[in-house]
Image 1: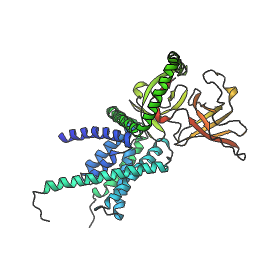
Image 2 (image 1 turned 30 degrees about the vertical axis):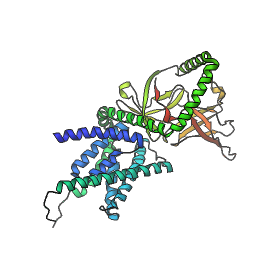
Image 3 (image 1 turned 120 degrees about the horizontal axis):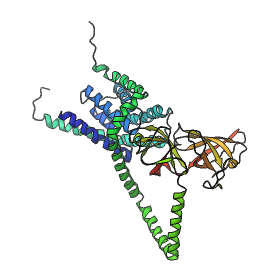
Image 4 (image 1 turned 135 degrees about the vertical axis):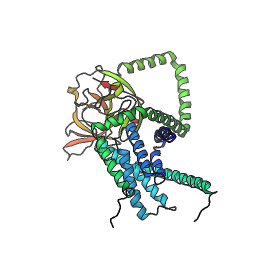
Length: 164
Length: 273
């Protein structure tokens, strides 16, 4: 029960932060949320949360239903394909994350416009530069979150014996 | 031995199929039924977040332009002092006259108006406004500001709507071109003054006008007015810019400079017939 309550409150807080940050820096918290939770929680819970938050974003931003969910599902497939070329551990993994975040912004622009207006959006240099900058900032945040999570894990397991 | 079906290894593929089904569902009437309750619950948070972001953004821009503001402010102080000394009474009368004139020419005579505030304009050639189905807004309603066309409602939820601007690539209208000497507040018979007809198409960062008569005497600065059955009224779109002068072409084309910078508008009106 407490978990459901926490998730509900988190969704409200995340939506506020998503709208707030998107207005200031065109920065999406949703993609950070996806990349942070991916492979860290139970896949079923992950898919339910992503679908719920994605549909909420579609509703409030007037995107056609399922746009965010479709973009994330394509992104997960891309991440899987990418893991063949780029190792998913070590420092190189962040290059993959950077590519995924960039692809998220581009796909959201393209799929959103195609589903809503049936036209392919014009992606000029300024838009690409904007996406590049936002993706670099998001990747930096991903690195910070990963480091923090690793520190917490280390703190948790310090007192335990290991057979490794 | 037969391999056991592992759901986890196909989870991404299943999620992709699910997302495609969700998108297809969104294209039906059921999509709106799913979106409405969520929009009802979460729109206030979104609007609150966007407004807070806009407030911070204004401060950010103000800080970046601080030096120019100080210069402008000092210049304005000097100007105001000079004008006050010269003729303070006339200045006040003139300002009052201007605002009254603006008010009287602000609205088109027929129809009912619903005022709306702009929440955000972060999408491709469209803006979000803070009123929706609850206030009687419907898809296809026209959004104006005075006599100027701002856009058309393309999506409605309970408390907010999406307005498709003329910049949007899916937006196209039939227009007429009038000389810039015409006083649009006085002239009722504009048919005799039409220089040319044409079609405007949104191109994301500008508005293209095509199919103007090759022999028409259209020139930069002429008024471009929308005369389209979907809009109903004749509304101002902007002024003509960069008219092509290719003698080999069968028609003239150019660009339309909108009357307002869509990024700077705060309030709009929805025209209900």
